Each structure stands twice: as structure tokens, then as C-alpha cells.
Amino acid sequence: MSPHSTPQKVIARGVGSNAFSFVIRFAARASFLYVGARLYGAVNYGVFTMASAMVELAVPVASLGLKRMIFPWLEEEAHGDAPRPATHVLLDALLLAAIAGIGVALLLIAATQLLPSAMVSDQLRMAFLLLAPAVLGQVAGDIALAATRWTHKMRYEVIARGIVEPYVLTGVALIAWYAGMGETGMLLGYWAGSIALAGFSLWSARHCLGSLQLRRWRPQATVLMQRARSLIPASGSDFLTNLAQRIDLYLVGFLLGDAAVGVYGVLRQLRTPILQVRQAFDGILTPLTARTMKSDGDVTTGEATAAATRLILTIQLGIVLLMAAAGDSLLDLFGAHYATGYSALLAMVLAETINGAFGVSELILYFRRPTVALQVNLILIVIAAIAIPLLTPQYGILGASVAMLVAAIVAAIVRRHWLAGLGVRRPLFHAAAPALAAGIAVLIGAYAGWILRMSLLQGAPAGVLKATPPLLALVVYVGFVMAWRKARPGVLSLDRYRVS
Image (cartoon, rainbow, N blue to C red; front, side):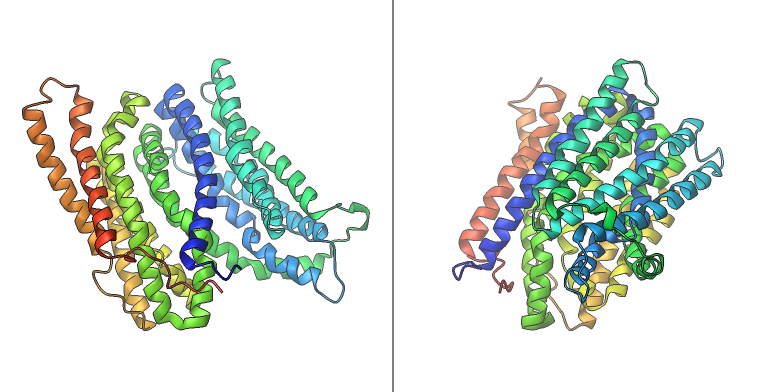
């Protein structure tokens, strides 16, 4: 690393690289969102959302955690007493995942066929049956792309996940809709995307790792079984994480039906920019957190993560205000079914903001007490499982979004308590400034918007009237952040992280 590299510059480069790939992915996702939600309608999009979400929940179980755990396996085999080609390790991993994937797909089909008719429509039951085997394509893509990252080449994953899979999915779904396949077109698109993902990923891994040398490949059943048993904890951890991220979607689908989950699925996609702010930081903050903990201890690392929380929250709150301004118009693009989801969207993006910004500190728990870190996901799951059935009968998808907002707040409080047990006691109001600024900006924007509506904007379109207060709030908020940084240089700095 260059002696002139500072944590700020290193993190900025890492975040910029990740953000670019996320922009590509979001553009692809947005194109499919329009095709699925607008053309196919809320019911068909809801069926697709539920079926694909079930596949994505099964993927971490079928992959046995190999998306992460293939790295130590590759290192071990490459530097062992009897080195093996990396391609043979990949083939071993794919064989294990294929066996697990077949079992998981059959289990998923059986479980969904046994669900009562009050929870699952016939169309959704058929979608589960048709889509479950696509687990194999998704798992093959995940593991093969992980192998390409082992060679420090990131472009293959960006191309596979950001271009190949989503655009094949969108193209086939669009063609199927024009061909009159209203109920199965998106499912066909998902299958096409999964096959394209698997094919391109396997080609990429072969290109990065070298010849497969199939004639020399000799998988050893005993060794593979031992390896599979050792991978179960990682697979279980990934499963809980995925379940915590999607449990609200499943509950909305089972409790409110296909059309409601179609609307809810669109809202979840629209909150993606908030989610991607945190994800853009994760790739670089995870190794830097581990390095800082080793070099400087937990307390200094806690101070570094507090600064990261402040920075991420500052960025996310600006996007929240932008979503408040544009969310209503965005929902109108998809049709009348979706226009009622504006309030639920705001609750959803606030929940994701809290999870994203205040979840940075969870990296310390993950490295020090991984079992405790898993309990955060369990808390989210329990709160959702209790609150969503209580709130959705009266409040619909708004009730589900509010339940997840409550869960996010509770999780943030619990993380703080557990960190205190490690001696990491961050100031209570370390991230209060951006939150307070956003609150004041909203009040100013609302008041200024009221004055404008009473005078200058009388007779303006309803969308303009609704967007004016949050847009004014965004301008005030950006001005505050700029003044705050000038008055307190370094307040958003991440220089406490150790880069070498």
C-alpha cells in the first residue's frame, strides 16, 4: 500500500468501486421492476416475488456457505502438502452444492405444496413448484463467482450479477409477456437468468483458475462429507441472515395475498438505494475493522465505527428526503395498485436507514462474538413474526413496514448494549447531528411548502404540491451538512481506521 494512502482515501476508493457496480445492478433491476410490476400487474408480480424470494432463501442452505468458505478451502488445498488444482476444489464445491441443492429443492417443493389454501393461492403453489429447481443455477453462480474473486478479479461478478442475469431475465420476461404468457412469463425469465448466470459464472471461473483437468479429478466421498459437516454452521448463519432480511415479505404474502405482496415487493425494490449505501461501505470496512481491532483494540474500533455510522447516516438521510419527494411519483409509474404504498415506503426506507447506519458496529460483534451477532437476526425475526400478524389485518402493508421499523430500532438498542459489554461505550448522541438536521429540515420544508402552496403554487399539479416540502427539506439538509463539515473539519472522517 502506498505510504501516502490514508484510511479516507482507501475507503473512498473501495466505496467508489462498489458503488459503481451497484449502480449497474440497480439500473438492471429497475428495468425488470417496470416490466414485472407495470406490465404483468400486482398479482402476477406478487406471485413471482414470493416464489423467487423462496428460492433465494433456499440458496444459502444449498450452497453450504461456500460463497464465503470456499476461500479458506482454496488456500488450504493450494498450499497443502499435496497441492490440488484450484479447479478441482471448485468442482468439489459444486458437487457438494449440487447434492444439497437437489435435496433443498425437493424439500421446498414438498413444504410449499403442504401449505394450507388459506395462505397460498393455486397460482403461487404452481410457481413454487416451477421455480424451486432454479436453486441449482443460483448456487452454481454464487460458488463459481466466489472462485473468481479468489483471484482478485471483481469484474466477472459485476458482469454476471449486474448485466448477464438481470438483462436476460428482463428480456425473456418481456418477450414472454408479448407472447401472452401472463402467469408464467416472469418465472420463465427467472429460469433463463439463472441458467445464463450459471453458464457465464462457470466460464469465468474456468478462465480465472485454468483448465478443469476433468480426467484427473477424483472427488473423495469421505473427505467431502467431512467438509460438508464443517460447513453447516456457515450455512445456518447465512440462512438466518437471509430470513431476517425477507421475513416481512413472506408474512405479507401469506397473510395478505398475492396482490399485496406485489405492491410490497415493489416498495422493497425502491428502497434499494438506501440499502446500497451501506453495502458500498461493507466491502472495505469489513477488513479494515478486523485490522483495526487487531492493531488498536475494540475501543478505538468502536470510535471508528461510530464515525462510519455518522457518515453513512448522513448520506442515507439525504436519500430518504429524496425518496420522500419522488416516491409518490415513482409509485404512480407502476399503476393504480401501487399508489397507496407511499407511507409504507417511507417507513421502509427509515427502517433500512437505521439498520444500515447503526448496523456497522455489528462487525465488532461478528469478529468477537459471532453467536451474539446472530442473535440480532433472531431478534428481527421474532419481532417481525409477532408484530406483522398483529398490525397487517388493520393497517395492511403499512403495518408490516412499521413493524420492521420497530424491529430495526430495537436491534440498534440491543447492539449498543452488547457492545458496552465489550467495553465499547460510544457517546449516546454520536450520530444525533445528521438526524436532528434532517428533522429540522423536514419542519422547515413543510412550513415553506405550506407558504408556497398558499401563494405561488395554487393550482399546481398534486404531485408538485406533494414533492415541494421534501425537496425544500433536502436543500436545507444539504446546506446544513456543508456548514457542519466546515465548522467541524473531520467530523465525517474515517481516519481512525487502520489501513496497514
